[in-house]
Image (tube, rainbow, N blue to C red; front, side, top):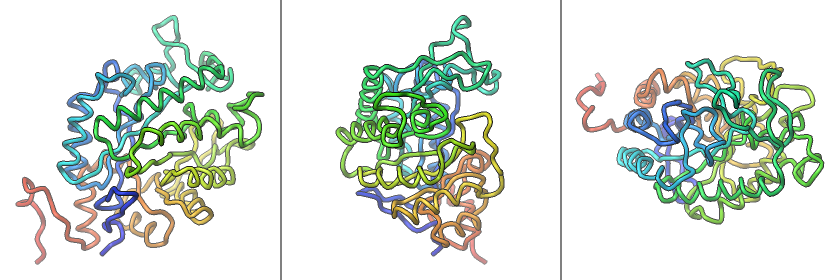
Length: 357
């Protein structure tokens, strides 16, 4: 069988294949609540055959939203609709995961189709926070540098969000520590100029993430996997880099993290990214090779053959897809056909399944 469709068991959770629906912001929530758009968007990817479906970046407190339209899990009232979505995903043999996030200095922004720019406080936005008082771009308002007490509270926010994720029935949590959002802002020396125990040397810059991991582990079932998404590099000289990513991955593995979702960039507008098919795969490959931790590859992976090649070459253990799964929610069903693998289709769609001649 093609490796893309081999089951993968992590802890006590088995994924029917190696295809992961990447967290993709939908900008369709009011006050953080999931709704029928999220049910259909995420549910259709379960019907379409993906192994793991991860929600968009889900804010652990209101100020942690990228935009006012983001999904949230900062209050118990958010659980009910999320639970319905999770039940539907599991009913269709996929695994439901949630990405817990805080946008940091990139918060308080308009949704892309509303302009994507930062909403200033005088226009109804909110005070953003970060490790240091450095704006994301020149035209952004400066974030407030977090106090140690506020950092401790944010760790609690992640912990409480994880508790709600348990109640909603999610089987995977992914901590968002990439793309220039809050946790990544602590990791990178470009955005973290602190002089206390959360800044300066590598061990201090990773402290916030390690505290979040520990807090989530205290409430997350031991049977369920914990993933972390990181940016393998900032693509900027003097920024976070692959060597630090490898070192961090080894420490996260020792702390019980099960998989590194290896993305890149997002921290600085000065980044220079050499976009090409699979351009981020080497990060997943290097982290896997150097640390032995499971990795997921993401970034301009658009075909069944490309995904299969990454797995066959031992470059990653799972394939995380975003835009291709927006274009084709049933990509896994079509990929199986391309690779000559016979997988079950939903009973309701069985009559449309191509038959071997």
